[in-house]
Image (cartoon, rainbow, N blue to C red; front, side, top):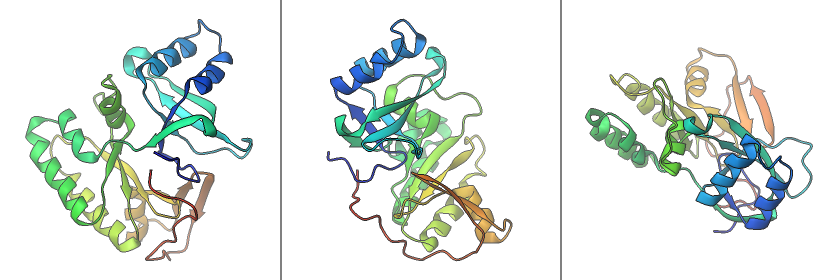
Length: 234
């Protein structure tokens, strides 16, 4: 895969050996972080692009690795060279989360995923459920949210998806649904906050971008957000 330009939050990347050598060279070899990263590298697992701080030099990326429960459940933050990225990818499609849910919920969950797909959204699962699917390690605990990434093109589509998720949130036994609506212009909004804002229950909403945050107080939202220049799907 070719790396999209620019890098965006929630993209997954894998690194080549020289990039890993550069990362590990800055750590004490026997430290918990170094040993964990060596195991992570050996398994070929990806890293996730984080929000990018302004002080990064050109060509650098800030990425994260959330360690599984058995490894101490620590989140590691790293600076890596973007040019040494071997591949870019996405979190697992939401329907795969059925394997981590109660058997009694499996069919309803697949139906919800199909309904989201019918509204033009191929949802992905990230957070604890996403990382457990990727690595096979223990991440999900009692009370873990089920986090969804919801790529959308416009406000109307976002509203329809939020209606589906709000209804599904009432299912007995289903983990708390959380996650973000992802618009083409790199704007990301928590779907629960979007619901509050669009209903008038909240007068403003927080919008996350790869390179910062902003608060929007006015209620206007373009029906077709402009795509970022030079960007393409991972």
